[in-house]
Length: 510
Image (cartoon, rainbow, N blue to C red):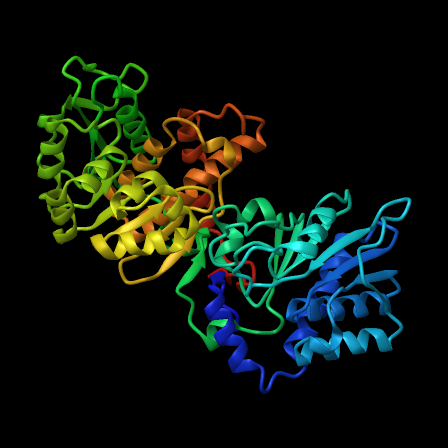
């Protein structure tokens, strides 16, 4: 039985599964993959007449393309395969796929043909698969550039050629797909860094393989099913004290808004009481937009807090450093963001104190902050976002979300998750402060730290997605707008979680 969660495997994991299956797989994996790709193609271009161009490469990805081309031709579609390699140098299974296609009367040309007058119905990239680790050059690079220029739907098999399947980094010329059919399971490079810009819509074809039955996955795609069990209605007999006291520490001179955004987000997610400690000596005594927030000086936050967030607008002065050091000594769940992370990245004492904490620590760096914590540059973090997130989690024995396209959540024991909600409109000031507030709000209400971080990250993106569907953004979306939307999405989840599963038997009245 397939898991309801969507596993993600790096290339090494996919290879391990394939190696266990290949000796006994009937039909062979390549035959299954090509057939599944052909079925996806038929659905993709059901109403588009005209020929299909399949560009096949010199390895097994090309073999998948030959099987796909044969299946499409047998279904009555006109197919042309471009293949410039030598057939007798193909791997054995790919060579058989090539021979089967030719034997079935398939057309093979040695260069990309000119597009027909009415254009291609579909162009298919079957050049290079998940094993590519070097830039695509020469003739194949030229082919990719030509394929990218076609106005037709563009389909990639397993991974767009030129894209690193582990990191999402484009390696020179890279195929830009409108649709990617990937096999067995998701790969991290499809979901993070530049991957989503090159993959288009992703279809996972398991090809009758339950991947986790062969190799338990360390990574999964985030979905509400990961925290559905915590989405419970509140009892009628209730009071605000049940829902925790959250603290926000930050708001230095000129940055009070950051702390207020975090506080408002925690409040609107249902936290019982929210205290905002401001470093600005002349900061406001009340938030006139959300007067329910309790504003204090940073040194006057209550001792009894359910959870504390440090960083929004904190600054890096000596006073900020002292307050952070004191916060690290508190035995409560702690969310660290922004300047709290910058201080930890430059102060060995603070770094050691974070690593020694026994209470939960949740870190929310963007790539530049992650680079400071790792002692490298931002480009190095982005080249391998998964490795960077896992290393920070291990080094500081913390839960980490490396923010960005395909935010990655990593745990200290090596598990990881990739988030797919959200859109580019979230690249605006204050978004990280809202995420911090959502996270500390769930922590204050008693959510387990891992679930709180996963839910907050997914909720934040889902709120922005809802706004975009309503015509608010993506361009011009502001952080404060996502707070109200997050409340709406979260309450929708609560309602949905109470509905019985679709396949559940109806209840019999007593």
